[in-house]
Amino acid sequence: MLVLSVAVFLNVGCSFYSVYSAKSKPSMSIPGGMVYALPHTQLRIAVTFEKRDLENAPYAEFAADLIGMKVAIDSVYSIKSIDIQAVNQADPQSYYFVNPRWTSLSVDSRNLLMAIGCDPLSMVDSDEESDQPQSKTKKAVSQASYNLYDRVDTFYTRFDKPGKPTLLSSRKDVRSIKQRATQAAERLEEVQEKKQQLLFGEFGGNYSGDAVRFLYDQLTEQEESIIAQFVGYSTTETVVFWVDPRDEKSLVDSQTVELFRFTPTKGLVDSTEAEALVVYCNIQSEHQLKNASRFMKNRTSKINSGNLFDRRKFKYRIPETARVTLYGQSKNQEVEFFFQKKVKISQFGTTVNLPMGRYHAQFDPNTGDLIHFSR
Image (cartoon, rainbow, N blue to C red; front, side, top):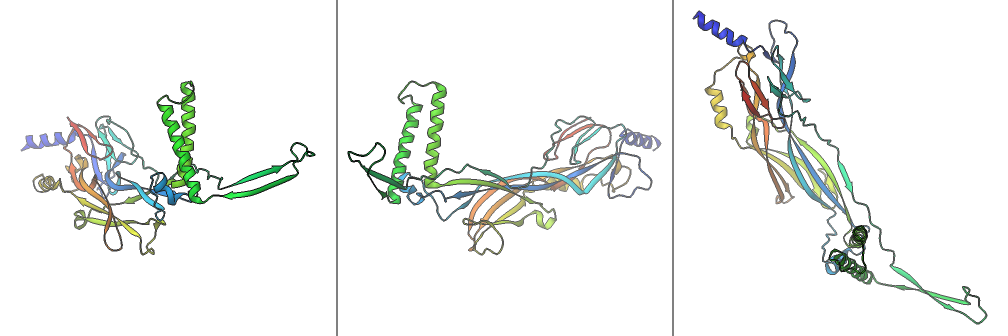
């Protein structure tokens, strides 16, 4: 029994570190050290909205017939893209104080544990991107100004001086909007034909490569200007929404939050808009760690928090895979769109104790997974 006690004491003593939960109350003062936290995952959902400006598109109603492009005049706003990312932060409820002694530790700017006993594979900090809306605006194109043109007739007599006729007669010839649209479509076809000739070397003249590129850019600018008179131009704005998945047992299976409300004519709106499309975010755990969690709970040794053996073990989290679904539901309960992605959520997973003693351990900076362990 004495030999066994000495062996256990030596095994504990060789770890050279002590780990305390920030919620614990040690019986004596603890020497200096450092803190780390277990990861807590938040969902960063970036939605890019597109706004189509038809103010400078006088030929929008003829776009489908003349240039083969459909324009939804009553749909100004649309959802262009959705991006979902899992961002780990320090869990305020799971901080630990470490007296490392002769053990090297690495933590990042979020106070998340990166490595024990060695240098981390990567010290890339997952700094949060700005959650302020970002706007990308395409330069507005100018509207054609040849909707009216003047025809001036001059009458000279034998006594008139050059530039000073006796009579000036002028009147305005007014073309219909469809005639103007037709002429713009014909001009567009000419520009596109010239671009094709440049590409295949059929354009008249012997031009250098730089000259060809310059001419091509000029023709592209003209093409875009004419097309904008039919379909307008668009601006995009990315709005970031944050969702904090709750880890209560009753909610892990499925939890849904309202993300935003949207209409094609007004864009983002509040709850007073009765006809708005309501976009929800649903989070469901896939329970891939269900059996592992049950084994660690029932078959691994139980150590009371704060005792000697508990203070000789670092804690880390194994994240659980979850399915995140974004869907838009109209007033009549019909689903208008659907977007889904799988991510790893730390608080849905399980907390594990590393063994006692000295070793090398490294953790994934993005997910918090243990990716390397060696003694």
